[in-house]
Length: 292
Image 1 (cartoon, rainbow, N blue to C red):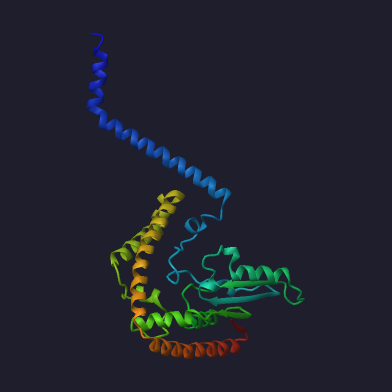
Image 2 (cartoon, rainbow, N blue to C red):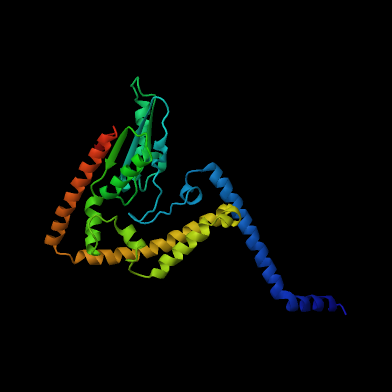
């Protein structure tokens, strides 16, 4: 009779063991999630800049030239008395790819000008980053044009460029596109994508989930889940872009050197035309242009 309780307990665990294991697994997972979420919130509070690309903005760090970022020239539409507004455009160098926001060219220039300001007419310098990691002068000309269309208050327009005006045309030539097309971000978005397009569709689908208002107000209030989906999107796009770069390099490698030189010479012509046009457009609006 003394074995009866033990037998009953054994039968209970045999009968409900799977459910008990599942409950314990669920409980431990929930506990781990809550602990990780609490730790992440504490970490973010004490290290606000380290995880900022994943928590505080929607930019995904795509490989070089594939980034899709908003152009922030809207800050140039207003100007305080005595303020001098400088708009900087260009490619990845001007944008500051790979650098913390406070260490890119625009932030460093604004800090330097305000620290060294000896002008009696200027109370404050505002330097606005209107660059994009893949832009060449054909797109920067559009940035300048749109700024004026929106009645920008900019005093100076700085264009930092050169490399993209050689790289993008060669890539476009490899795909049979006009030399001054925007480049492979455009190629991707207009159906020229090589490699597994399922990866591109998966990345776009995950972006739709991440950017959905309902999800952002509910489950993505969890910083842990938001970081998880942003990392997942990045991994998917990195894999996709790897496939794209392999295809692009294969196409470029078979172009004869003489043909590449002709592409570069033709590219220099539209580079020159863009600069002349931007200079004339800025001059008419009373904006001082600088080309670096």
